[in-house]
Amino acid sequence: MSEEIAKILVDIKSVNFSFTNYFTLTSGLKSPVYVDCRKIISFTEERDFIIDKAIKYLNDKGINSELIAGGETAGIPYAAFISQKLKKPMIYIRKKPKGFGINKQIEGEFKKNQSTLLVEDLATDGGSKITFVNAIREAELLVKDIFVIFYYDIFDFEKSNLSKLHVKIHSLCTWRDIVTYLEKNNVYSESEIDSLKKFLSNPQDWREKNG
Image (cartoon, rainbow, N blue to C red; front, side):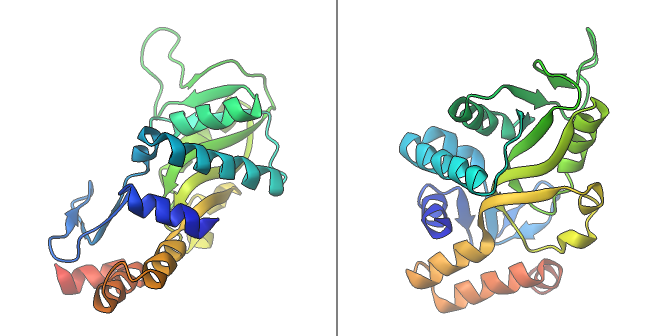
């Protein structure tokens, strides 16, 4: 399943590679890869396949939360797709209270102590998820699972601040799956894949050598 999803992400260019003119990330750092899972929403067949696999994953893992919560903004469509399939209520969490009206950070109807699955498009080191987890818990909802389509899985999660919140990240695809797909199908040269592996194993060291 993970390799099938890896193929989809590469084919629709949700996962992009540039081994000469590197991408500049929002942080200003350089990278030979850029992941954009938002693109999935535009490809109906691929989207349906991924959402069906997401439902199967959640069922197989026994994740049966009462609420499906989407994180602003990229997590909202995936939370909507999943909640519709599961016939469960959905909420979404803003990055911060909207600042007017009743100043809500969470949109939708819910009750205290309902179990909540946080849905996002992807996770790197998980840092951005802290805001959403804290908002969910401040609203007296329960959250212990985060589901994403793609997880970088190149950081030590156990040492992350998100890990301290006692939540678990679940994903359908990681960089390991992407690299396996690239190697099996000779999508890029051996030297390019080797460069990618070096970046994924130690991004800081790669940047020092590649500017």
